[in-house]
Amino acid sequence: MTRTVAIVLFENAEELDWAGPWEVFTMLKQLEPGSCEVVSVSERGGEVRCAKGLRVLADYDFSTCPAPDVVLVPGGHGTRKEMENPAMLAFVRQAAKTAEVMTSVCTGSFVLWGAGLLAGKRATTHWGSMEYLRKCEGVTVVEERWVDEGAVITAAGVSAGIDMSLHLVGKLWSPLIARRVQKAMEYFPEPPYGDVPVTWG
Amino acid sequence: MTRTVAIVLFENAEELDWAGPWEVFTMLKQLEPGSCEVVSVSERGGEVRCAKGLRVLADYDFSTCPAPDVVLVPGGHGTRKEMENPAMLAFVRQAAKTAEVMTSVCTGSFVLWGAGLLAGKRATTHWGSMEYLRKCEGVTVVEERWVDEGAVITAAGVSAGIDMSLHLVGKLWSPLIARRVQKAMEYFPEPPYGDVPVTWG
Image 1 (cartoon, rainbow over the protein chains, first blue to last red):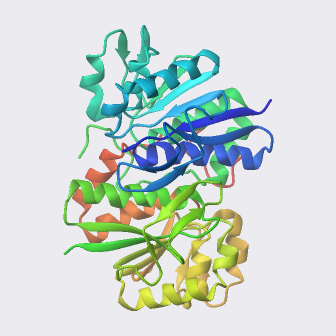
Image 2 (spheres, chains in turn green, purple):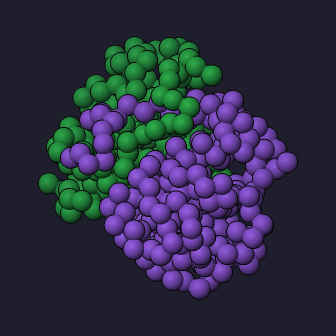
């Protein structure tokens, strides 16, 4: 089974939030041809300007995107607008009807919440937005690197999307291939100032 | 002093190789306005198709790029061509004359070698290309996450660019701001299958 992984892009999406998962899933495709197709999609397709100024071209718009099996919604300050954007919420709701897993990174969880996907669920977000997520009705906030609720998985801030995506590869494909992806990405982190708690610094 | 950080893009550059450092340096700029400007540059400017199919728009071409203080050359299978591309090598050599630091991620080290910047230096690359780097004249190969030789810093594969860039922020700006960047990126990795040696899997 070839799964379609859709990476959702929008104005002011945080770059690494989606680029980390993009690397994980496209590496999976390279190592295991036929395992997945990875596409980028935005409301109108074409050029999207990200939160830190990177300009990327989305492969599809919301109307032309192939029905996805996995959806990833990144964070970034653009989510403040997107969590109330009717076109975005309609796309996410529609995708959720047939997708195996809906995922978010960082403040992307607010978009999933806006689409009604976090009602009665445990979820997480960037540490700096945790208090705000606590105000979202129906959500049980959990301070973990990622929170797997089956059909919905939310990840913590920015770089956490890499860990969450590797977890998802292990779950939907196999732990063996997830390890091969991790090795191909040489994802054996050595943060120069240590791998410290989020409360630090 | 506002430093200019130039991220070099080319056809088939590996996405996370440059997107990780892009996130680090642009986060630095956001947290410390005036600390740096981050630009992307390619031979001809405009659309660049990366190794895993991501299409991005480079801010500058080689002739219009502001003189950089820090240069980052990513890896990816495009480096096989770029390490012999006269336009790329001329750009890298010219930049090295005035830049404070020239850096590479993954097989980007072969481009630095092609430009003559690794002669007599210790350097590293992706684990899968280590044997090939050993054949490059004048290079002492070191299997570390990153190798800091002062004016030249090379990093290991793909995700290692994040660690190397945080190290560089700590060195050129300050350890305190590097920690703040790390925290803002929530870079407290939890690889789901462990942070294991590269020989694993």
